[in-house]
Amino acid sequence: MTEETPGFDEKPDVPSGATPDDAEPKAAPQEGAAPAGDASAQIAGLTAQLDQVRKALEERTADLQRLQAEFQNYRRRVERDRITVKEIAIANLLTELLPVLDDIGRAREHGELLGGFKSVAESLETVAAKMGLQQFGKEGEPFDPTIHEALMHSYAPDVTETTCVAILQPGYRFGERTIRPARVAVAEPQPGAQTVKAEDGSEAGDEKDNGPEEG
Image (tube, rainbow, N blue to C red):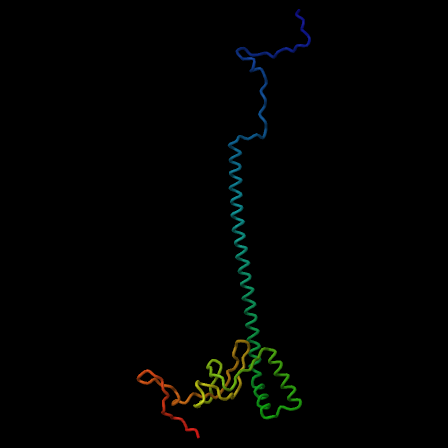
């Protein structure tokens, strides 16, 4: 019998026709390792997804900015309408008070604004002024058809343009809104006082006078 030599392992059987290297065990491939081509494809896919997310974010941001602008315009429009409605209501109230203010003015001109009536009248005028009511119309100012209403008309030699020579009823405005035009008497320059052009081009006064002569 052949004795086994201690300390030596038996070599595995090698099939006939195989090299010794075939007998050595091969290392198993590492799990999780991906080829380089697959990694590039994953990066490209993630980049495309990031671009889509960025584009969607930009669109949502633009939508939000548009909604904010529309909301601000809506708030301004509502505030403007609220102010307009308030101004109309105040103007209507002040319009109803104008006849009372006219009576107060006439009483003051005739010296009848006395006692308790004077105190009440002045309080009413003060409240109307605080609400924004403004009186206008003065003698000697040029006639403006947008704020004046001519009730009387005459000619005068001492005016160079259509002028308010008497205030028959004062006008009132509220802010930029004219509640009532000033009712006035107007005077125009005498027709004979207008300058005319001579045939040589020089200006000369027309000696013809259709108006009354002054003493």
